[in-house]
Length: 71
Image 1 (tube, one colour):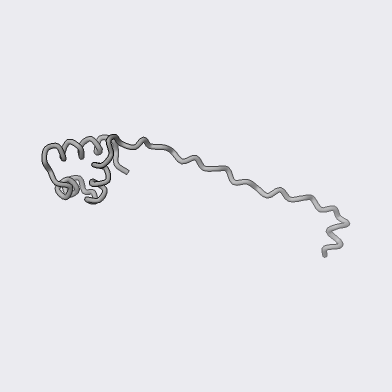
Image 2 (cartoon, rainbow, N blue to C red):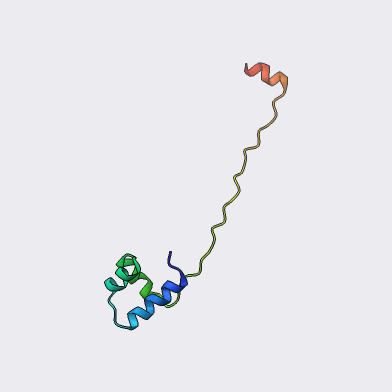
């Protein structure tokens, strides 16, 4: 994931006439990543993923009589 500063740096480098490969080499990124971010008008907003709580299975209590039948 690129930081917002890198996004604007990539845009600036492209305006100065650098190729995607040159930008990628300069920043240590893949050229396909540079190409993808150059297509965007503004950086994507970071959204934290919310972990859903794990639901526990409710176990029906078994009476002593049912327990003896099962055994």
